[in-house]
Structure formats: structure tokens, C-alpha cells
Length: 89
Image (cartoon, rainbow, N blue to C red; front, side, top):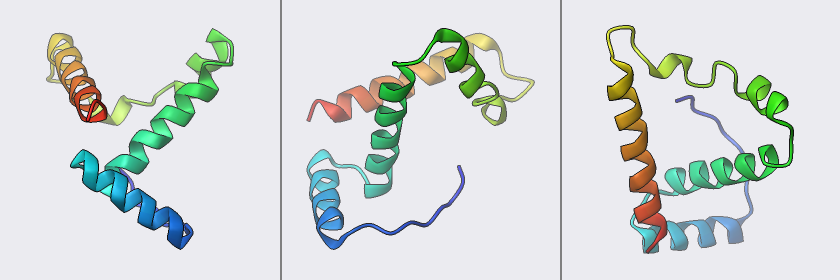
């Protein structure tokens, strides 16, 4: 992950903290989820070729050469299942 800084309004901070608290997650995780959702919504309106082009290399730093593909897939599935469960609250 990479650290970034940005400005948001006071009311956004209040609402963000409230929602994150009710879901039992950090505000940072809620922001990451919102970004993922927005990117998915935007990518969903594009062609397959554009999606592939825009996401090329997205996970390159996530994988180590000594990991098996089955382990990588299982880890990704577990992470998404955790996000789904958090969003059900």
C-alpha cells in the first residue's frame, strides 16, 4: 500500500467515522472500499480490452515467486469474503 493525503469536508469526516464505527472497520478501510466500488462501477462501463489495459500489473507487487497460484487465489477469496461480511452489517 501507498500512503496518500487529501482534503475532505468536516461533514464527510463525521459521516465517514460514524459509518466506519458502525461497521467495525477503520475509516481508511472504508475509503479503500469506496474507491474499489467506484472503480468497479467505472470499469463496468468500459470494454473488456480497456479493463485489461487499465488493470495490467495491478497485483504484481502482491505475489511472491515462491507462492503457488492456489494459495494466491485462496488468499484473494478470503479477503473478498471478509469484505462481503463486513458490508452485511
